[in-house]
Image 1: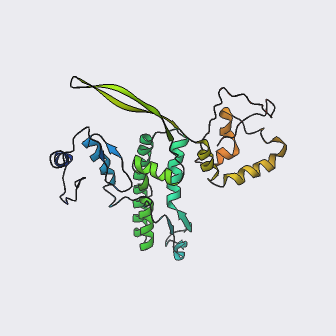
Image 2: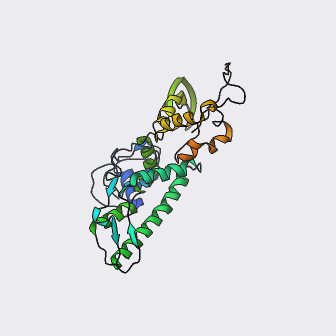
Image 3: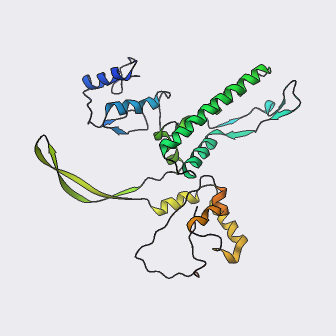
Length: 296
């Protein structure tokens, strides 16, 4: 581990030595807000130990920069090995021509987050176990190919990419960054309502501290925009509407029935949108049995 506050190139063998340098050389104390210096992060920490643990997530990456994850997302299997026959084998092995590794990893992570209602911490444990399984499987496959006399450098490189396909999701920060980059995670909008003063007691003295009152909300327009930009969902809705024609709302219902809907079940990253209407008078143009809301 290197120093987090300067260009000191000395390596520290344990966290305790690094904590001593931050406290005594750079005067970083617990309670001070310290910013992570990793490119693309910018999170603040009140404890030195938490900052160091957070920084360890970036040790495998030389420099983490926005939009720099998985730069080699797509790889192509060479034509000479798309269809090949292994010697002393009765069947041939066919490989897919184009594989979007980053897309597969994103769909997997979004599915475990939404369909199982997992937190980021729980999802990280699943990703870690799956990553270990991928590493063991690719190592076994690589050894099997070598024992069969197949040693193609491009195949070995592709196996390495598959082995590290979940690396962009090995921390909470990377999880959120990938979802934000794909318009999957929408940050709430904060509105300042006003200021007020609170009394704080510090070593027997009373201080007046100004505190901001804020209100946060998620813009429904932004959510709908992100929803209809995913997986050509508009064409699916239009095609479904043309099929049912006279019964546009008969199979699009609220409550728990949306899970059985064709559009929701076909999209692994689908999310449920809940609309709450309170203290509003409106005229329902649909009959009581036909009223509902579109969920996905």
